[in-house]
Every structure is written in structure tokens, then in C-alpha cells.
Amino acid sequence: MKYKNYNDYELISMVRENDGVSYYNLFSKYQPIIKNIASEYYEKFSSYGSDYDDFLQECYIAFQDALNSYDYNKGVLFYTFVNLCIKRHMISYTRKISHLKINNENNYVLIDNYEIVDEKAYIDNINNFNLICDVVKECMFSLDLTISAPFELKMNNFSFNEISILLDIPVSSARYKIDRMRKIIIRKLKRLYLI
Image 1 (tube, rainbow, N blue to C red):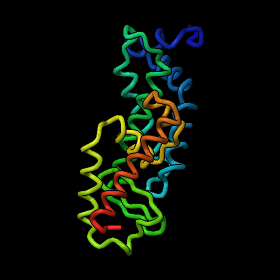
Image 2: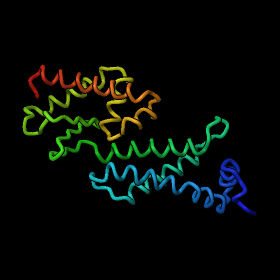
Image 3: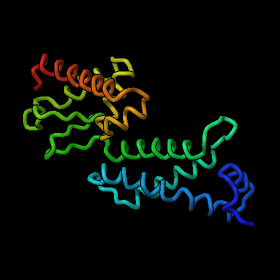
Image 4: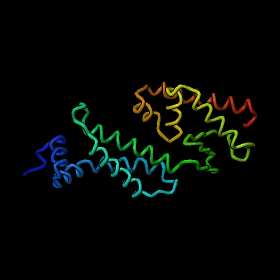
């Protein structure tokens, strides 16, 4: 049997019938995609202490989950579904490893997965860190998700292009919403004399 002659749907069907060779073929086909995603997230988040193998392992887990939950009746290509599942899993993983870390060298303040980068927000100038955390949370949760979601993604090191693709909005709209959210937070922090 030449498994290369089968498409993804046929291979998935054979995998679900416990055909190890078809699983190997499907996995081999998607391994370059898995490795590319792992490399992409490793480059952005390696400073949090995880090595490349950790990122790759998380991608493998996400691939397996995608394979188990894929439903071809929904009209989505397996490639698209796998790509989305792995990226969603990696977003969760990177949030977990970056949660509540403070990087004094780059003036990052991570607050419940929201990273604020501002040249004025040096750690040495923060009088009441807990109050700043509360203000940022309040701003994030008080605004509509259409404004807070782009900001959250940007603060998790997504590029404007990635945000545009993930949220299905123009790049200019993503930039505007992120800038608007940033200004709201800075304005509130200034009003309270925290920056």
C-alpha cells in the first residue's frame, strides 16, 4: 500500500482505525510546519527559560489534540485546523511561562498576561505596583474585547500582521486599537500620578 497516494482525510480515517504507518506518514508531512511554529515561538519567548525542545513538545501535543478532534464534516482543511490549534496552544503555553514576570532591563511590566511597554514606566519610578496592576486590569476588562484583544496580543509579542490575521482586521485597525488602549491606560495612570 502506498500511503503517499492518500490525502489527509483518508490518512486521518486510517489513523483512527489504528494504522500506525498512516499516522507516521501524516506526522512526517506536518513535522516541518510543527517545527516552524515551535521555532517562531521559541525566538519570541526563549528569554522565559524554556528551551526549544519544550516548545517543540508543546507543538507535538497540540498536533495530537488537533488530530483527535478534527471533524472533516465542518468543511475546514486539516492543514488550516492543525495550524490554528497549534498556534492557540502555543499562545496558552507562552502565557503560562510569562505569567507575572518582570523584566527590569527592558522596562516590561507583566500583569496577569498583559505586558505594558512604555519608556516612562521604569520600575524605579513605580510608587505602588499593586495599584498599577489594578488600573491596568480595570482598563483591560472595562473596554470592549475588540479593543482589548489586539492590545493583549501585541503585549504578548505578536506582530501587527499576525494580529491582523488572527482577528481578521486590517493592520491599520489593529495599530489604532492598540494605540488607543495604550493611551487610555497611560492617561489613567497619569491621572493617579503613578507615572
